[in-house]
Image 1 (tube, helix red, strand yellow):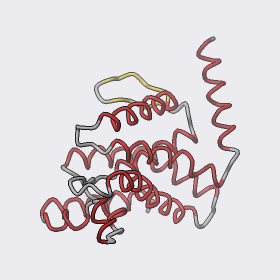
Image 2 (tube, helix red, strand yellow):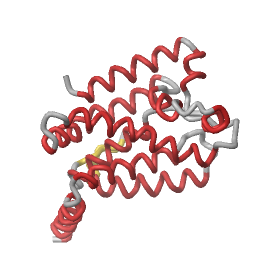
Image 3 (cartoon, rainbow, N blue to C red):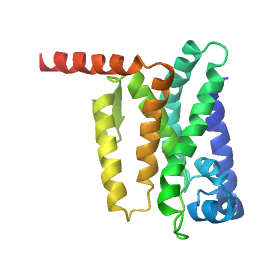
Image 4 (cartoon, helix red, strand yellow):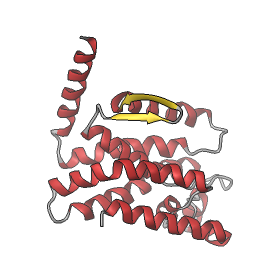
Length: 210
């Protein structure tokens, strides 16, 4: 069974458990203050398996479902035999990387906590964009395909802007750094991915301009 499906199953199970037991939610949420002051660093990881509600869970798991296979298959091709394990490590590290962004910013703020797999699913999405920059993405209620590279630029811009603005209860900082992590991580294994990415983008732009 693909690791992507196992991650989805595990995430759904933990989220549903927390929906029905608030003590689990309190114990596992990403809470920078508790991490820094009490040494509860496990929260950097466990918060990525909790969700605010069914819609939050659904959106993250749909993203993982549609793009996880592409990234997992790439790891499988590049690293025969251990590819699925490395993909799992990539996903778990993405949760931690996204959480660290807000950990350092809010470690002295007891009021701040964050949950959700959005940082990790952003990493998977941006790894997919690195591998296939012209893949078509669709926004809800907008039936027009958006090239991955265009979506990625807009996503990073909005995440950065919304993180600075704040006030909406969404951890945009985790989204931003999760996406950056997902784009950069595969390049450490295959540096040629970066020039290949730009070659594909240039060819797409040239074709679009006619």
